[in-house]
Image (cartoon, rainbow, N blue to C red):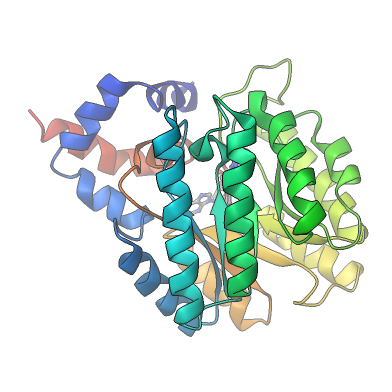
Length: 306
Ligand SMILES: Cc1cc2nc3c(=O)[nH]c(=O)nc-3n(C[C@H](O)[C@H](O)[C@H](O)COP(=O)(O)OP(=O)(O)OC[C@H]3O[C@@H](n4cnc5c(N)ncnc54)[C@H](O)[C@@H]3O)c2cc1C
């Protein structure tokens, strides 16, 4: 219930104004977002790589409605990739891209062209791109763009969301050799017709999908902070004899950093998803919806506005 309310608020410009102007918001944002500028992203990446972690960088922004915004997002990724390559941070650091930030909502071909330019820049810098997955209305379009991109850039990564009923079948489709697939639970508000609603059902689906990916021929990327899912992932890695070069764990910047360090120290590949940029609102609200404990910060922000 609380999750649904917060996810609904994540699409409200009125609530966004209220949250953005509240005094404590900056503290909450700093916890989950590396900073506003490209240099902030590079600094955070350097720190994580020095600590033995891999990184995927996300320039915040989504649901773009104007071609100029989509082009500006593309250009930011091109700049970022050049800087990452120049700083010797590739291939440890790759990028994560939302097609809706590249124009998917109004022109799928434009989103493809922009994503293709980013894949070419990543390739030139010696690294890869993963296409984030957004709400279920975009799944078919995103998988279609992915399959076009993979013709020229076969290492382009996909994201599949265990809460969607279709995902087991998508995992089977995408578990072939060379296919990089990030498996997450899913962060959007979805109707019962397409998505499991209870945490128990989502967890069971996550394990079924993990079994398909870990027993397949691709490169699974297990994105979760859930101790039970992580333990099952460790178990499947032993069972299917997958060493650190054949799968990875992924977690978000600022969430369970001690667990990220523990897994890395045990020899696993661990990738931290690092968001940066000004447009943090939708991202922050999804993080709050996942963990009611974070609402304590949020509540303080709103109360101190008065
Ligand atoms: C690298 C990465 C990339 C992602 N990309 C996408 C994407 O492209 N599309 C998409 O829809 N979603 C994406 N997500 C978000 C994902 O779908 C989930 O919404 C999010 O990860 C929460 O699910 P969970 O598996 O971590 O566990 P949850 O079900 O949220 O929590 C399970 C348990 O994990 C532990 N836990 C969770 N959060 C915390 C915390 N903050 N502090 C301490 N313990 C915690 C607690 O023990 C909790 O009970 C991504 C997540 C990650 C990690």
